[in-house]
Image 1 (cartoon, rainbow, N blue to C red):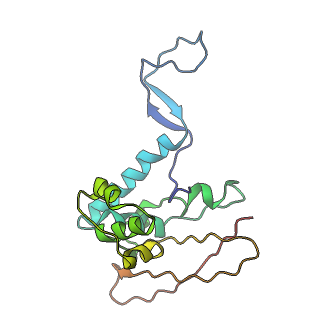
Image 2 (tube, rainbow, N blue to C red):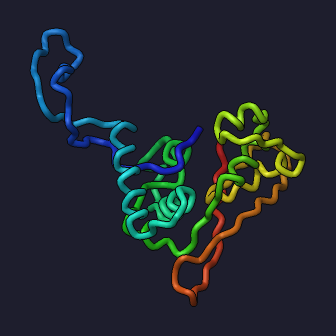
Amino acid sequence: MQPDLTAPGVDILAAWSEAVPLTETEDDTRVVSYNIISGTSMSCPHAIGAAAYVKSFHPTWSPAAIKSALMTTAFPMSSENNIEAEFAYGADHINPALAARPGLIYDAGEIDYVKFLCGQGYSPKQIKLITESNTKCSEVMNEAVWDLNYPSFALSTTPGDSVTRVFHRTVMNVGSPVSTYKAVINAHQDS
C-alpha cells in the first residue's frame, strides 16, 4: 500500500529516551537527551503539524478537506532521486504554506466513507464497529468504491488488458471566486 504523502523524515533531531541506549551495541552505555533519527516515525509529526497548520487557517474544514489540501499542493519528488517512485511517497512532499490556500479541495463526509467500506466488502457488523451505527450496504453503495471523493485515483490492470474506468469526483473552489482551473492527468505505469 502506498502512502498518500511524504514529509521530512531523514536526519531529524528528536528527543531521545535516556532509558534507551544510543546504539544497539552492547558496550555502548552513552545516554543522550536527543538523537538524529530517520524514518516514518519522524515524518508523522511533520505531517500532523502541517495538518494542524492548515486547520488553523480553516477551522471548519473536515479532515478529508485538509488531507486534500495537503495532497494537491505537495511538491513533486523525482523518481530519479527517490528510487522507490510514487509508490513510496504518494502525492509527493508536503508543502504546508501552499496547503493553507489550495484553491480546490476534494471533501468527503462519513457517508462517503461508509459507501467506500461497503464497496470494499465490509459487512454491516464490521461497519458498525467503525461507525457505531447500523448501516446496511445496498447495491448502490457497493458501486461507490471507485467514487470516494479523494484526490487520488488508482486502477489495477493486467498487462495487455484494455480497461476503461470512470471516476467521479467533485471539487470545491476555496480560492478566489474568479478562478479558472485546468485538469492535468499524469498517468504512471508500473513496470
